[in-house]
Image (cartoon, rainbow over all chains, first blue to last red; front, side, top):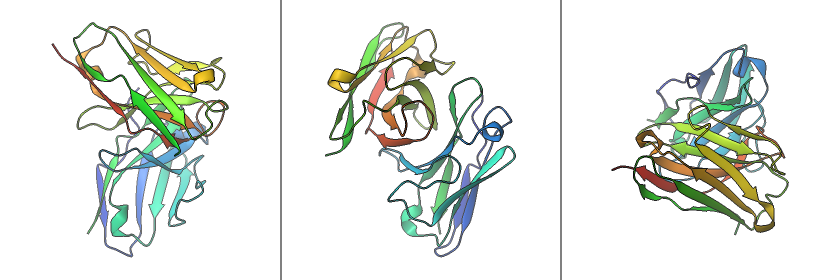
Length: 110
Length: 121
């Protein structure tokens, strides 16, 4: 099964908002609420930012939010900060009882 | 300190086997599903396998099904990944991660630092 589709890169200036998309199908993103988003700094452990489409774990800034429409999920980061510069991955449960990740998006804070 | 610690990585020849371990310390894992996730050099994250809190449910990615075996020992709070018939494309950093729930896809809220597996002749 191919990875979920994410833009390879996005960028924004400090204080701005950006949105990262994650497109799948009715067999994954569109069919279930089990969509998560992870922040990953190279060489470090990934960090859960959003689970079940739009839920933030304790300790994650409320500048991070998630949503979904049809077969596409979105991660929005508001009031962008330099420390947000990282790789971001979406993941989704699939109808085959597996998990699939997106290809990853590199966020650059200008 | 709350952490998952992987071990067992190394350099191995194609076709050989390797077993990875992941020990939990300072956190509860006995009531949580556990995953293995990998990242090949220059590539994105790839989910490998998951095991439910009691081992009754196990699922694998197509790329490893039939070659890899996930297991857990709750008495020792340890997760394992037995990797057989290794291929060059299995070269990656392997992470273990705790699921938020007993099974199986509610988000991975604790991750280890990873152990590196290199498959090369």
